[in-house]
Length: 343
Image 1: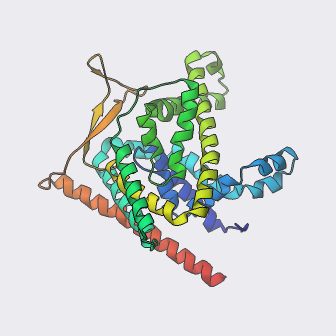
Image 2: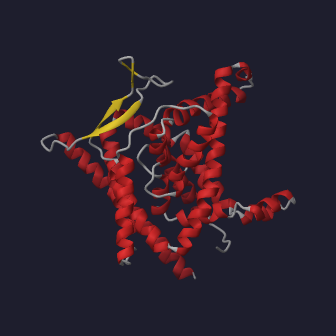
Image 3: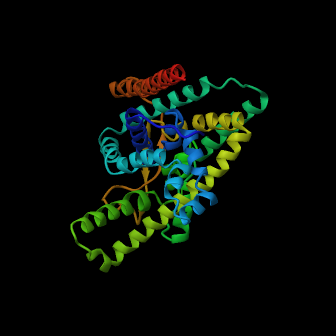
């Protein structure tokens, strides 16, 4: 992929796309990989991760920092992941609030966006040979199977946390696979994306104010070790899976796209708006996390009541979600036409 200079507008929108991917990664059932696929930077992201290799390490060790910077496509990565990190402490907090107070409507919007994503990816897919159709059904089966799996128990063993990082980050590299939902299935969603992140934010605030008392707090150090290990696993997983994905995308692009279409379709059950939470129980009491919120064990899905005005409002938000993807699609087409005219 040739190096190209981005305008300020391009950089700003890329940062916003990173915001969207970061927010999606935190919400169970929504895939950051799907967001990157729909917003048109998925393949560049995979390409950039693949450049973090032995040659990049040699450039770094030899002090050729500028060459390393451009070799790994750092301008792109910094914008996308800068947006993702910023969203973790901003947009995702807003999402947490909206899910807590307007859960049905938020999930309805997500459902519409996933439907729009399927449309977006499928409209460019015109290879309906038998092997690709079979691949779509394999993807659907995989998505449905994951949707109905039961979560495991929480486990803070650092090797397991590292594995959670490797597997959980797959939501960024595999469209349709929600990393947050995978962490729920592994039992560590609250530990890694709620409790540990809260402690990290608290610690960073203390350090900024010149307070280093956390070094004597064993519980705080424990959470910091957990979040550091999880981050290490995530970085390793990003680089490792991107090399695999880059290879299979190059060799079997249509088959991989077919599996992605099927997988996203099968994962619709995860974001089905009409569901009730089943909470974890300990000695007859609902288990609470560090923030006092109920810990979700699973979901019970049901069909909506069409006599309720709430259902029709939810259906409106499904259309809103679908419409957002159509607008993104329209924007992408305009940008593509603009670039073609410049060339």
